[in-house]
Each structure stands twice: as C-alpha cells, then as structure tokens.
Image 1 (spheres, rainbow, N blue to C red):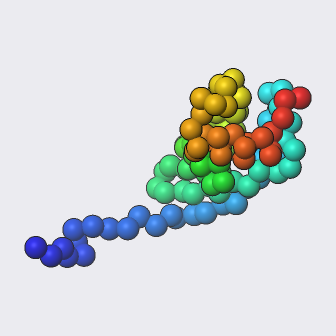
Image 2 (image 1 turned 90 degrees about the vertical axis):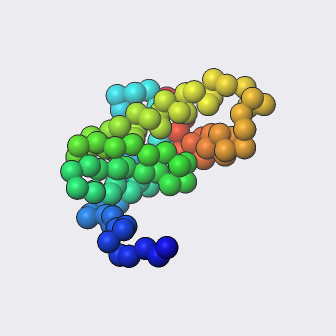
Length: 106
C-alpha cells in the first residue's frame, strides 16, 4: 500500500532566529561565554533550542521562548550538579560537561 503526498506533510519553520544568551540575571549565575541559541517559529509557537546541550523550550513569542530556555538550562544545570556524577548516565554527563563550559555560580 503506497502513500500519496496527501497522506503526510512536512512542517518547515516559518522563521529562524539566531540568538545568544549572555546573562542569566537576576539569577546568580555567570555566563563564561555567549551561549548560541536557535529560535524557530512554527505558526504561533516559538521553540528556543540550545543544540549542544540538547535543551529546548517553547513560548508564545521569541522572548518568552528564550526566557523559558534560560530558566530550563539553569534548572537542569542545578539538578545535574546536585546529583553525584557516578549516578549520571552518559547523556546527562555530556550535558553537564557542556553546561559547565558556559555556566558558573556567581
């Protein structure tokens, strides 16, 4: 049974925005060097992604998506640093290593 082009569709992004995180203020974390972020708009939703750390968040606009991503990055960083490294699997360990390259407590 074959499929026709009407059985599926590809949802290409309508807009792609390159951004950088340079601060986590007012939170008490410093950015060691700018963190590259890609924000994609699909319809009325914006998805902010930090690809190296594999962290993504959405919002109603690009600012909200970026703010949500910043918050999620810090939540994940906090969670991973509180856990003994021997309890982390390969993917969380890699994620923690990437985040430590960019973030430090102020």
